[in-house]
Each structure stands twice: as C-alpha cells, then as structure tokens.
Image 1 (tube, protein in one colour):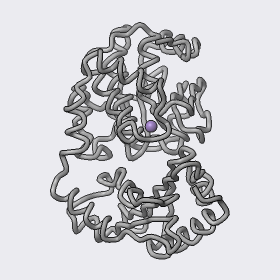
Image 2 (cartoon, helix red, strand yellow; image 1 turned 90 degrees about the vertical axis):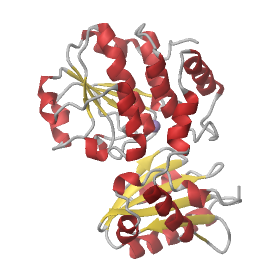
Image 3 (cartoon, protein in one colour; image 1 turned 45 degrees about the vertical axis):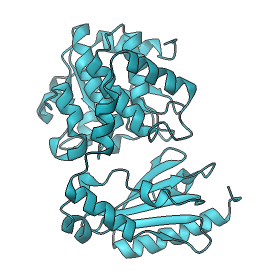
Image 4 (cartoon, protein in one colour; image 1 turned 180 degrees about the vertical axis):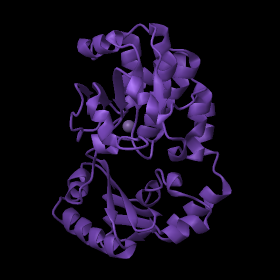
Length: 331
Ligand SMILES: [Mn+2]
C-alpha cells in the first residue's frame, strides 16, 4: 500500500510537537472515537504524550467499548493549555468540536485538522482533508504507516470499527478498493473483526431496542415513495430509557425501505433541540438540502440541528425535502 497520500507537513507537525491534544466531534461516532483512540495508543511510540479530550457523558453506551479497549482515560479540559499541538479528527467545522467549555479556546492552539467531510472549513493551521476517504480511520491508518508507527491488534481493531461503521459495513458508495485494501491490512494486523461487529450490531440494550421500535412505528413515506422519514420526540426517547447519546444511525431504519431516494430522522435528544440526519440514495446530493437548514456533512450523508417544535420542524423539512427531490430525476 502506498502512503504517499499523507502530506509531509502533517508528519512534520506531529514530529515537532511535544504535547499533543486529541479532539473529535460532538455526538462522537465510531470513526471519531476509533481515530482518537488509535492515535492515543500509537503516538507515545514517537515519544509524545497525547491527551484525549472526550467528555465521557458524550460517548454512547454502545461505543464506550472503543475507549475501554484502548484503556483510554479522557484528559480534563484544563490540560488543553499544556498542548502545543491539537489534532482534530473527523470534524467538519470548529463549532462541532467536542470539548467541555468553549470551543473558541481551541482556536488559540496550532490545530491539525484531519477529516474526510467535504464541507470541512479548513479551520486548522494544517489541514489534511480527503473527501474521497470513506472514513477518518482510513486516513489515520495511512498517517500511522507514514510515521512508521506500529499498528497493534488493538489499534487495528479501533480503526476497523471506524471503517466498518462509516461505510455501513462496507455497503455504501464510499467503499472503494482502497478502503477494502486498508480493511485487509487491518485484518492482517490482527483487528478483532467479529468482536467489533458483535458490539456494533448485536449488543443492543433493552432501552435501545425499545427506541428502535419507536422509530419503526413513526416511519412515514411520501405518497410518491421517494422520501421516508421518522422521528423520536424527547418524551419518546426518555420513555424508552434512552438519552440523546443513544441516537446514532437509526436513520438507517427509514432508509431501509426499497426504492426511496432519501431518508430523514428527526430526534429531540434535549427538549426543543432537534437533530436531523439526512441520507441520500444513489446520486441524490442530500447535503444541498441539509445546507438549506444550516447543516453540513458529506454529499450523501448530512446532518443539521435546529431549535424549536419537533412537529413544526418535521413538517417544514419534509415539505422542503419533497420539493428538493421533485426537482431531481428519479434514481
Ligand atoms: Mn467519519
């Protein structure tokens, strides 16, 4: 595998640093946590003492195994002061960083931005943004190879988790021969694949299962069959015994209906804070719709946050989505 993809200044910035902070995005997913945990395990080999800033309350129960496997303990936010380099992974814009306190405090630091979101605002001093990469873990793998770091079985497991989830089990259009070649390398390095997949797909708690039932029950499809959407109100989420952190990729439920062009999930993790996940099938550039509502992400997978009444936001966005899709040719 060639690792010439990694810009030399990225390696230089890491090698020159003494105390490296690691930061990801709010509502961290497996790609974000896997990237942070893998770097946290690998960088000491280069003589660095990384600090991972991952507020514990933001990590879903289902994904907490990633941090446990790494033996990672999150650093208190105050330790950011001592860092002379902060690597921000999988985060499209600085406002989405997952930090206790104010994200603005981060901007005073030299930032190294490693990401695969096409909407990345290039907020770092160094920016390595590759929107062709299926996951940030894929990029972190290349980085570790370029830095001549060992990829231990645990590091391989963490990176595999990110590759696997961001590609929906290697099922999305973003899955390339390159993605699979890296997955092959990770398997060769000892990634514990069945363990990751059991944690990700066969480890639902009863509350998570009950929330899934709500999302199935609330799924609707427009008369033309092009849009499927669902919702979970704050009351429904709490009645199931879940919290905002348990909303992950349940948008895959309405998305699983045959023939749709787009799927949307509206979730009210906190009262009147509505998170919207958008997915586009085939060539549907759903990001353009999400951006009408201040959102961002990838061309076929995007998100937005709005404040207000769930039902009002739901009907407004479903209407806009229907219009958006009617202007596109049928897939
Ligand atoms: Mn990602």
